[in-house]
Image 1 (cartoon, one colour):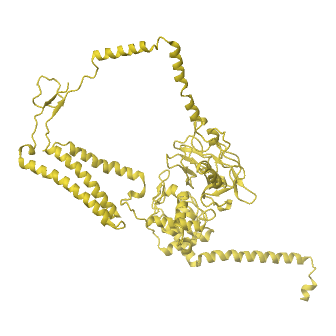
Image 2 (cartoon, chains in turn cyan, green; image 1 turned 45 degrees about the vertical axis):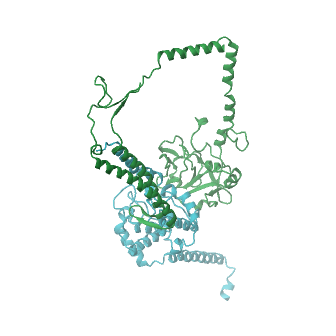
Length: 261
Length: 346
């Protein structure tokens, strides 16, 4: 201590202290900053390595060797694990053929492989994480409130009963009757394909859970009137009347007009 | 003038017979008494079955629990009572009609008859009498003799509809000040300088960082709830509803005014300029806004220009910025009326 006490007025002390402070702040920040990805994903380095192999084999031809994107596919930097999980687990990626829009089909990867791909893409740049079971739990969520939010934010494309609908140039908004809570949540935070992003800033988690509760309610709704005709409202109902019922009426008119034997 | 003659006994000299000259074919029931009896039984059974179905309707109504469901192939799970009430009442009235038609077809006389049509013009003497009555009326009323009465009557009749014009002119509410014309009411909305932009339905204020690139928010002005409370209707929402979308600032090709975006966040009216459908069908990759009613498509990266469909005008843009607390606000009202075109806009 004598050594330090003797030299505390040395002009170099200020520089030394400044350096020590910078190292402490920078190092501390690096530690805190590193905690988050490690905690969020709990991914092992081997999972990332595994994901990288799968990526290079299955995805890099369109999205680029370093996920920087190419003429055939957008960059994946910053899309996050949630986007990878949504696109790959629903079979939309890899695309089977170029088209207006990627089609949902049976996934070519198993669950572990999807998780590895998601871990690899998430390791490249920060992005939305896969929602946890707690995030997508809609236990006790207000279904009526979810219906209001669905009609305000979702129904314009997915139709008021979640049956999906047409967009421009051959694109479409998919039917939601088989979508899982995780898929719905991931779609809202990542905005796949034409869909805009409904961020947590403007549509908080609680509201997203209400929307999921409403969609779940639609998925389990019965049709008290029988034939629901796709729940598309007057379009299919009108078509049914014009074809089936008019055919019956024309048949009756013909029967009335035929001369009896 | 009416001439009802059984077909076959019609005089052969008529050149234009309306009935094809085919021999009348007798039905089985006309010649075979057993067939006639069978037809009689058929008709009577339909009427009888109709009666039984009415009884079944009443029984279904009383006996079936309203919550009982039944699975019917193709139709799925439906309420048993609903389907029974529909079937019994529908079939009972159908059988009355079907029985009546079967009766007419099988048992009632089926001889073809011709009913000759009247001459369409009135007889000459009736036409002359009507003309004479008109002339006599004109002379006796003095319509031609008293020109002052004739002209004042025409004047009175011409002025009479004028009050209706005033009543029609008075149909609009007159707006807030009570003296605004309809086009003035349509030309302004609740938006004004420093009006906070709220998320529709949840009423939350919005910070720019809440909205990521590719994000979409349906939004309303902060004073909307108050105005709806005051007016007791949704008229204000019909004009003030907007959508906020965010894109990379470099993707914005043009706007309706310099610096009307805030760091790539642009605000456009939610009301289609064609016939006023509310639209939020936004494709984040093309920046196109599609109206599902008639497929009008607007490019929000290019000043809301119409790229497809019947809309005639760009989607109106709302100029926005942030206030000193960092929340998004409007900097003015829309510069042009929102929604469909109207008479005064041409």
